[in-house]
Length: 411
Image 1: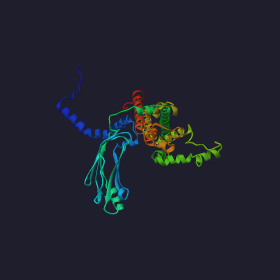
Image 2 (image 1 turned 135 degrees about the vertical axis):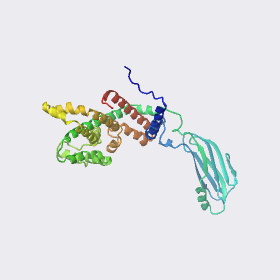
Image 3 (image 1 turned 60 degrees about the horizontal axis):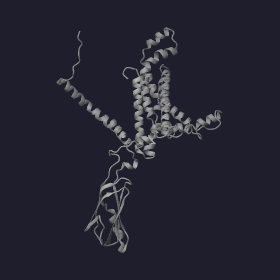
Image 4 (image 1 turned 60 degrees about the vertical axis):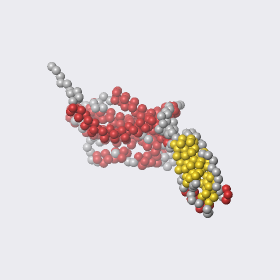
């Protein structure tokens, strides 16, 4: 008995269908490339470039023109400098036209040439940090103060360019060596893993219990559901400020209550002491994002066939047995998806920790490290290197998740 074989796709119709499919997919592929792939490639490119924020602007010649002196010592001065202290600029020229009423009275040194009112200078190459000064003795027909504004108001033409460290093909591992140097990186990585793992698992567990509580119909169920969503829909800056104010060691209500109840002899700096600060930001992560897990888990629980629970009741199963043997197997798929998404989102979280502690008191994660490297100390290359490390960590986690953890169909 012979089995049917699919077409090999080499016919004219198959090729036409393939071209049509690629034409339909082209807008999506282009959009994804522009929005995701190209910025990602740019970050990887920058991570191999040891440069700072000031190096984003390519080196260029900078000129300033002024009218100086008085009487017989009146002169026009051009001060030319290389904007970079290290990179040379080639093809540097300066050109200008002296205003009417200004008459040159002396010779000009090379490499400048003055023909009538037209000035042209060819400096060739300006080394890093090099400065040049051109002096042209002049006389003016009238008030020098009036001509000063006229001279300085005109912009001389200047040309010249140098290599941009961002676009050249010189690469270095200096950024990665700086990232992995010493024990600081591993401490930051441990904080990130603690915050991510416990924040993710806590949000899932809390969302699961919230879904169990609201899986039954009762009066006020809709109001309670809406109340559960408040931490997730509220602006992060508002809830973060509320938490910081609530747990403030000097004026916070939480400390006042603990002291009055005798549970603490003195105020506690919840967001300023190790390791309490890390625990608090993790608790904040759980509280703020458990509603997302709650919504998905509750929707899945309500789609489970109730006849299974009725049969379990007839067999004398306890509530725990029904939960563990019936509910959990039905929820494994959505729990796996939520764990994957929440782990990735929490690993990339920046705003929550930055608003609560600023990364201080042992709460510095990899994302906070990206901000500090790139903007606090203006080391764009090192910040990009940390971002690439975050990407590699998430790729490794995704591989392990899909290869060993998730066994659900479609994942």
